[in-house]
Length: 202
Figure 1 (cartoon, rainbow, N blue to C red):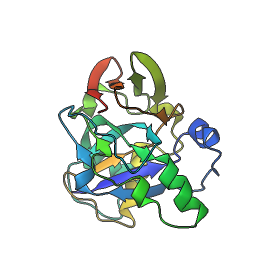
Figure 2 (tube, rainbow, N blue to C red; figure 1 turned 180 degrees about the vertical axis):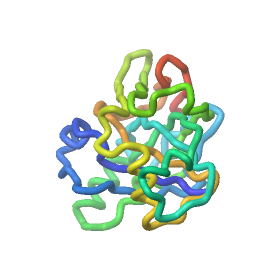
Figure 3 (cartoon, rainbow, N blue to C red; figure 1 turned 90 degrees about the horizontal axis):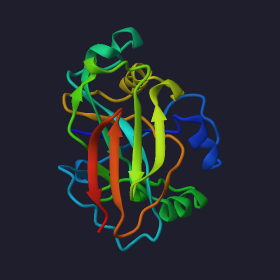
Figure 4 (tube, rainbow, N blue to C red; figure 1 turned 45 degrees about the horizontal axis):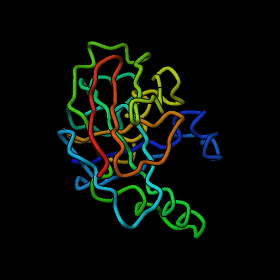
């Protein structure tokens, strides 16, 4: 399986980082070694002093497909979840300054905590709310209605370039409010009112 992550899919997040608004979806990959499951703790790596949380809605691909048209994209997933795209912002900034790829800042071990998955049938995919609390304070809150590209548009776009396989996970982008995590922080993520993530930074 692979992890496909969509960047810059919420306008206010683009603004908070001072990035350029893209004309088409931006995506990058994380390896399966980035996965962190079962609310296991996230161990803050020594190579960065500025790890940021980025809460995201996830979709899990249920059947293989390539060059999927938008009108059929919803047939390729039936489960959604929550995940955090941990980002070593200091390493990312350094790589960007030098014009280098920045997987080093996104793909490290444990950089993709994920929740269990639930049926999408319980949600209106055009209006799914989600949020992240850090130490009992809401730091990020998003809704799929604010996405620049919908889930179906993302699946269709990515599949033009990469064959999507059963079990692949797509991170669909993060809303505004990204920020630093430190050892001792507790992160709790909600899909609507359902608690999906609850783990500590160690």
